[in-house]
Amino acid sequence: MESSGGRAEGSGRGPRVLVVGSGIAGLGAAQRLCSHPAFPQLRVLEATARAGGRIRSERGFGGVVELGAHWIHGPSQGNPVFQLAAKYQLLGEKDLSEENQLVETGGHVGLPSVSYASSGVSVSRELVVEMASLFYSLIDQTREFLHVADAPVPSVGEYLKKEISERAAGWTEDEETRKLKLAILNSFFNVECCVSGTHSMDLVALAPFGEYTVLPGLDCTFPGGYQGLTNCIMASLPEDVIVFNKPVKTIHWNGSFQEALSPGERFPVLVECEDRTCFPAHHVIITVPLGFLKEHLDTFFEPPLPPQKAEAIRKIGFGTSNKIFLEFEEPFWEPDCRHIQVVWEDTSPLEDVTSGLQHVWFKKLIGFLVLPSFASVHVLCGFIAGLESEFMETLSDEEVLLSLTQVLRRVTGNAGLPAPRSVLRSCWYSAPYTRGSYSYVAVGSTGDDIDLLAQPLPKEGAKAQLQILFAGEATHRTFYSTTHGALLSGWREADRLIALQDPQAQLPGPWL
Image (cartoon, rainbow, N blue to C red):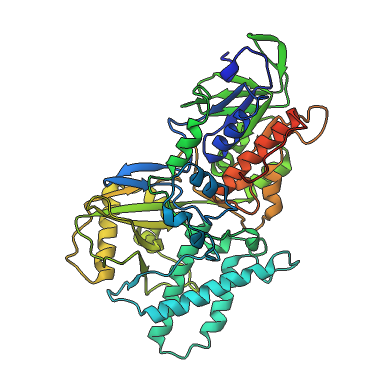
């Protein structure tokens, strides 16, 4: 049996701690624990050949593209990811400015630079602004139902559609304009699906929707790639802490396990890996994505999780949002264009999609962001969520490129538009250790389920010594789905162990 002693193997000093997963939650927990002398025996088990988890920056098109996390949401002093990025000097001067930190976006996506309709014409900006104002005012109104005993409908989607239907009844324009308004609104529904990481806003619970907290600051990106942040955290860890290509099969807990190297010591947890190596531990911090937990819930823990915690894992939502990068020889967009919106005139949030995914998957695309040019290379980044996003993963690169070439030729009205030179895309649903993108509070669940997921095990009894702890974005009640929520959750669980070992420790608290 392989020992898990880590850096100070065999020294016998301090508890054996395992962190499962090296996304930003796992790396944050490891960095926090390594800074305290009580944890010389620490290891991080990573299923893949790389650290970073859903932060994934890759070289492409002559620069860096983000296949995973894209922005720092709310880059301001209350955001630990922003603070770390500033500490490591990973951000541009404008992003660090006080002016940028004070911007209040309300969590809303900015207006598109240009909007193309599926008939090949540009959509009136006035109409887009009017519909954006309506849509986001209704999104803001959903906060009124936080902590209200009886929400009028179960889901955000149903609430939005009810309000839109009432307002549409009073529209006085001709039928063509009224249909176009609904089509524009449908594109904003698609945007919100990407933001929430869900197939449909009908799946997102209304009452707890306002619990998600938006931090001030204009969302910003990492000029050198988001992975620069996780690389800096990794560089602060001792060299042998992370074990790569070590997928975990089963967490055996509430036991009494021994190993040959420490015959007199017993461990309450034994982590069994796919390659049959085993790591005994006193404490294990689980940071794997909720999508993986959902898929492996029946086999990942032995004994099984308590029914309430298992039910929380089943109830919390976890969906897919992907990106599709298209490289062009020459841009067809204007130099000042930043965001291209695509409006399908035959769609409406008040009507259900009836066609098969293979015929309409591309209609879920919210449009394209124009990425900063890399050495005269011109790249658009499309965003797509839900079942359509998962279907896209089953297609070949050639099929995706052909479909999106046809879409762009159709919406621009330019049948001779040159095809993109190449395509690169994320496939988070197919990723075996992720199985999706990020969490949301689904209909039938509440923020209490997130707190329940975050509770360590076992809860009570003589063995209640924090055997299994849970971190990751899905365990943060107000910052779920974000990198800062994930980082804070890793710190939270590390601090829990530090307080157990050293009750007098002066913990830095949630902020740097």
